[in-house]
Length: 248
Image (cartoon, rainbow, N blue to C red; front, top):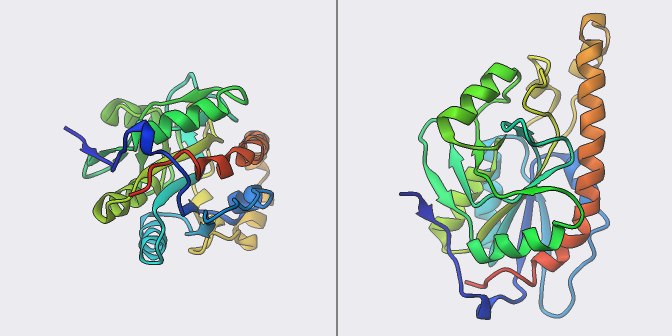
């Protein structure tokens, strides 16, 4: 049975001190127009960098400083062929690749988030898989989908969920699809980002100088532009997220 995140009955849903944890600077920039909540609610955006270690570090910092809820926000890769660039995933559970540990997200909070964004894009509640490395091939995505029964993948959400569970605070995730399940990505795409989540110029330029990769890059860039527009649009709903999640 999967572990459960902290949950609460709908009657207790109200504003909370919410930490939005995003891996990449490009994702954080999509949230710059997120208005600050009023009253006693605080909404903090933390850039954790790519991968489990940075995500765990940021989540621990947030709960140590008093965050009463954690929300993993950013882009994701599709594992399910029915998901297209710009679609959103607000998962019912997250699972860590390798260990297979599955943690249920806060169900009432997640349902409220889905309800707030359903009119803006297509939303899935399927499981979100956190992987140690970027899945760059259609074959690897298909294998992951079968093994873990997940619809999309990222590299951070399971680590954030584990910290939330250990700290006794609610957790949810909102991820927007960038690459689709049949898309191939450059093998070195993970090297385009440094450990803080900022872009590295040199590896990107090296890829641009390889004509054989231009088709991949054009597809990848087009998908990412769609995902960024969707994430920017959905960011307007994130302030409301602070008012629909349970306090601990």
